[in-house]
Amino acid sequence: MKNFICCVALLGFGANLLVNSPSTANEFLINSEIAQTIKSEEFIARGTEPFWSVIVTKKGIVYSSPDVQKQTFSYVPPLKAEARPADLVRVYRLQGKGNNVLILKKIDSCSDGMSDREYPYSAIFILGNKVLEGCADKK
Image (cartoon, rainbow, N blue to C red; front, side, top):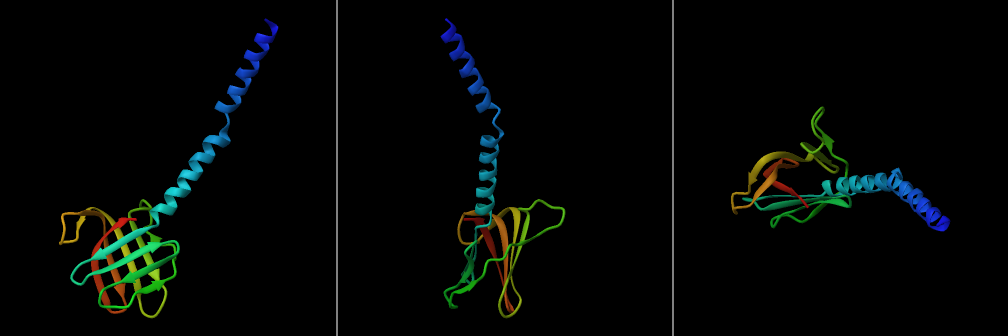
């Protein structure tokens, strides 16, 4: 009987450590937030007439179009709107010659004009003197 009581006491003590262990729950939340932040930085913006796309990842930002040779820019963290949710507006300043900028804004829906697909972001891509408008989605 004493052995049984000791086992129950030890099991209860061990369970209490697991339930009240902040590191396990916090590690999960922190890792989930990091994964979400990394994922939320990956976008595909695209437009029609003319056709173009910009892929944003931590590895780089790539612009492509059937008319132009693919251009790759270094990834830079986006500017965000002051006093607004971080996911509302993102402005990527692309390094290189000219004023190259990608602006993504979360909206109710954006249509590419060619398909029935609705996108959650509008996109404006400025490459030198060229301004392209389209839609974007998280990758």
